[in-house]
Amino acid sequence: TDAFTFDPGFTSTAACESAITYIDGDAGVLLHRGYPIGQLASQSNFIETCYLLLHGELPTAAQYAEFETTITRHTMLHAQFDRFFEGFRRDAHPMSIMVGAVGALSAFYHDSLDIHDPVQRNISAIRLIAKMPTIAARAYKYHIGQPFVSPRNDLSYAENFLRMCFAVPAEDYVVDPKMAKAMDRIFTLHADHEQNASTSTVRLAGSSGANPFACIAAGIACLWGPSHGGANEEALLMLKEIGTPDKIPEFIEGVKSKKYKLMGFGHRVYKNYDPRATVMKESADEILELIGADNDPLFQVAKELERVALSDEYFIERKLFPNVDFYSGITLSAMGFPTSMFTVLFALARTVGWIAQWEEMLADPAQKIGRPRQLYTGPTERDFVPISARG
Ligand code: CMC
Figure 1: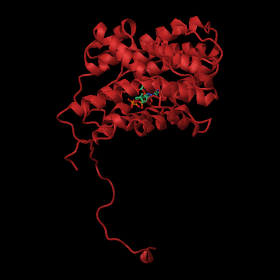
Figure 2: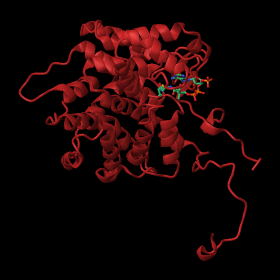
Figure 3: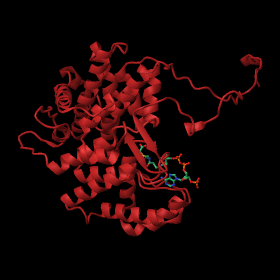
């Protein structure tokens, strides 16, 4: 057994080589294909970042136009697919619908399941990125009991998604450009994050040769957990539970005595400010101002909690800074999304990162099935005792 390195939680094991995303957690740096996340969030957009992650370089204007058009043309779902949603209970968590629906894409798109064919791989990648907003919006509409809204090809990726979520029949729905920008930014900030738990899950599932839709469904299942993508939902629930700023000192005492964790704070890799959080905070402030929610108790609690946590020795010593999920939760709530949709939106945005990593893995000549070993701690060999002879 000594032959194996024991590394629970993979804190010091590199499982692959990757040229997609670089993180320096001590310096608070995040680069996609070399480009700083702050520059992508302010000067690029989600679709362009998708192209960058998938292809390794920023697109030319012609490549961008073609990529955007291709994505837009694949936003529709097979008509039979809508029936699939109706099988769920109305009160189903949208993430549970998402895991099921994305896995079920493999039952609808048989012509893009061959992982050895680059053309089919590309079609499945496009389908996933294009259909994810439609699936997410349907999960939401089904959950709140409203009819589905079809995608519209003349809108941008973010506008189309907001419209599919918030438009109601017989009413004109015009997407506020500031909302669309904030939505696009949330997507861009969540597009990839190297070998986190869900990405590693996608790679592990993919290493066995499973089809892309099944692999992405595996990633969504992993993302759901509160220590990972589920943190944005948990962060908001925590703010609601605290209720008013005067309850914060008591809550902080509970955190210090390890009764609860401060959700939306801390990160395995960032031991400095999460660079995504810096950008997300700007969007949060912008949206709060736009909807005039500065006096909302929820957002007052968030601001005060942030202030206290950043000045308290306990958090400073442990390098616990607000992470992207703290601010994305606040922003999404202000935009009108219920907490149950937060992780769904994270999954939607991370899909491109999962696909880029899955593609990279399949292209790697060193690729083999992921098969961790263990340090065995059970009994040594012993003889079977018939049930009649057991005491
Ligand atoms: N609140 C209070 N204490 C914390 C927190 C927190 N959020 N996170 C870590 N600590 C403490 C922990 O108790 C430990 O203290 P001590 O040294 O006294 O035992 C110390 O900080 C080190 O923590 P750790 O558990 O070794 O850190 P980790 O790298 O295993 O955990 C984490 C990283 C993200 C799971 C954790 O910080 C956490 O649970 N945060 C809350 C959930 C969250 O916001 N997750 C989203 C991460 S960003 C987006 C994403 O990846 O999906």
